[in-house]
Image 1 (spheres, rainbow, N blue to C red):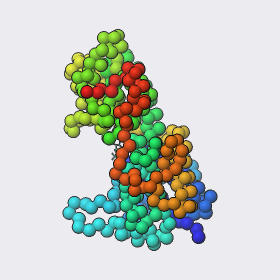
Image 2: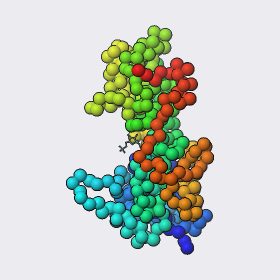
Image 3: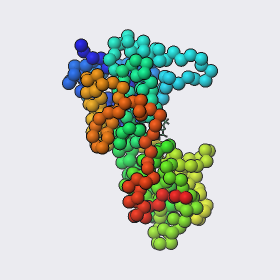
Image 4: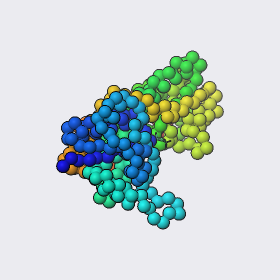
Length: 340
Ligand code: F6P
């Protein structure tokens, strides 16, 4: 019996989504003779039966393209809206799944998407999850695709700040994405030679941060680069970078500027590593479907590709361990993490 599968991309986009769609689709079609459709705009497409047929031609030429050819949304089909007494979306999804004679839906997304995927599996829809996000915070895998591209973009931005910071003898604060997890700030901060790195997992003290900057200036180091994650503690009415820059300038008198990198980190072509990771994930997802091994999220563990049950992933986050070896090594080289 020919298997029929659907693919969707949900949540915030990231570089590598098309490479993953291509990895699933090509392996499913060429190696297993499956039929493949793609739901548009994340779980919305699954609810409202909006999809396109993904034949091999549609999957060609998309490996290097950023964004997602399927579109995405933050639709959460199991979430009850305020005032709603019934939620018909899961039933609509089940009906569409049966009407379209699907054997499995591949859900490519982050933590929220994996949680929804686990809920779908519970109501009798076969699913496979593929973890993506620039934030690298999906529980159960060592790495998500999108992360390497974002780190590369952020590192280039930090490199560029060094020269202008030096010319003007300023402190430069650069804010990268990561609400809960400081992975991008940690990796781009280290790759870009950041002097101070602030992440949500390590509570900082602003006076100590200022002292570190003053020490640098007194040691004839004419400028400082402060790399921060967007999720560090700061007043709600302003960005983290605007807050930290204002504090540094006020408390030290050193001229300080802030840069908020924002969505640039999520746009454009995936890095070579992300293309490979997304392709591996996609191809492995198709293999799991061929074996009928559903309810799994593909994952890298101890450097090897495998899978974890979706129910073990949902609702959890992969955060930076403050005792991570990388942090320890950085500290020994003088990088300051703002600890209280
Ligand atoms: O993709 C993850 C992420 O980039 C977060 O780091 C960021 O705060 C969030 O998505 C913002 O996404 P959106 O504005 O699309 O909801």
